[in-house]
Every structure is written in C-alpha cells, then in structure tokens.
Length: 331
Image (cartoon, rainbow, N blue to C red; front, side, top):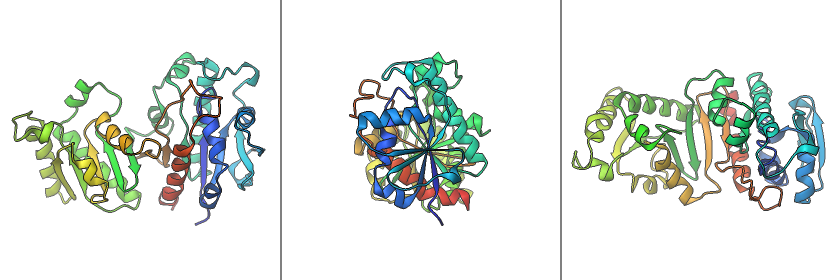
C-alpha cells in the first residue's frame, strides 16, 4: 500500500496543537510512513513556524491529492476560520472554538469521501467550544455525530498494551452504575470486533472493579452479580475472554503482550495505568466509526502555548499509529 494520507486537524489555534503539528512534520520518519496533511488555517500554521524557528514552505492545497508530502514542505487544507490578527495564544476565544470545530468537520467530510485514510487529532478546548456555542464536550462526541456513529469505542495503545473503556466522561458513581452484565457483554463483543478490524488477534482480559475483584463478594458484589456472569455468557458464545483480573495487576501483566486487549471498567482505571507507564506515548484510538481516528491524550496546555515548550512526541506517535492501522480501514 502507498503511504496513507493522515489528516491532522490543528485543534484549538490558541493551544499547543499547531506547535506540535509543525514540529512533528520536521521528522523524517513521519514522511517515510505517511503523507501528513494539516487541516486548519494557513495563517495559524505560519504563526506556529515563527515561534518554533522552523523554516518550511507552507503549501495550501484544495484537496489531499494535491499535496507534495515531502520533508520541508507542510501541506495544509486552508479552512480560513481564524482572523490571525485577533488570535490570542493561550486564551479562551469563541473564534478558536469555532475554528477547532470547523477543522474537525472538514476532516470528517474528507474521510467520509475517502480522501483521507485516517485522522490524527490535536487538542481542543472545552471552554472555547462552549464560548463558540459548539454543542459538544469533546472530540469523540463531535466525531460520532458528524459520522453518524452510535457510541464510538475508545482504545488506548502503548507498546504492547491496548485498553478499552466501559465508560468515559461520567462521574465515578455513574460509572459504577454502568457496570451491568449487558453492558459488559456488549463491550466484550465490540472490543473483539474492533481488534479484528485492526488486524489484532488475542484474548480480551476484563479488569475487576473492586479491590481484588471483590473477593467473592467480600469487597463488593459487582463482580459476582454482573461481571462474572457476563464473561461466562460470552465464553459460552465463543468469545475469547477471561477475568475479572484485579486492576492492581492486570495492566502490568498486559504490558508483556499476553492479551489482545484489556477492558477497563471506568475512565481513570485505564488512564492512570497507561499514562503512568508512558504519558507522552499513550495514544487514543477511536473505533467503530467509518474511519480511524487517533489522538494525543493531553490538553491544549494554554500555559505554555506559543512558547516553543510543547513536546511533540505524542503527536508523532499518534500519526505513526494512524499510519500503522490505516490500511485496515481502507482495504
């Protein structure tokens, strides 16, 4: 397969997204593995080049096929959403929330048309989205609506460890209430389907919810009442799944590649494990949509934006992971 075209929306123009995007495109390896295409404002890209001291040509193109995709040239689809004279780096602005949304919208349109092979997203800011009256709390919800996808599946990948999440942005109390037999069964099934689409084989290992997976009801009954029955029923249906395995050990064991993936039962359970191991190289993949999306898993970092202090490692990894799996979505 030819190098896949990876769309990179710039995120919030006042954050570190533009900086980590242009720094990533200074890496030779990116161009060996992919054709990176920025989606945003040409003026924002040029501004990022000024404070990162990078001397690159910015090539505005009307369509992905018009890109040069060579080191030293940054190809960009110019969405023209930002008045660069009004841009205030490091601050919440309605203009930037709207721009971030338009960048994503354009990326989705191109993906659905088959012009992009995958998307690797940079950070957006919830306050800027709110200021612009954009009715989404984050990327996943935005992408789901724009692609007409019901409940996309989030997966983290770092080295040999892959982690799915039973719930995302809800309170811990609500997350516990969501640990039901039917939901666990559904996510085991969907996690297997996602792995198959990525070309990954292996067992799904389900994490325990309570300390020591509840010790047969001594420390909570969710394992006995909901999780174990769900796993047994899925095993009877032929799914390769085991558990529950205590959350204090399952992620450490999973790092050696023993399983295809782990099902984390709530947001922070898996986030803490992966980010503690390697914060910068933990990459988020959104499965279940018509196209693949990968992402850095950090925020807009307004406190260091525009100062040439942002580390691009996570962005580089997000692009590489998108290129790694893209052909499974375009075959």
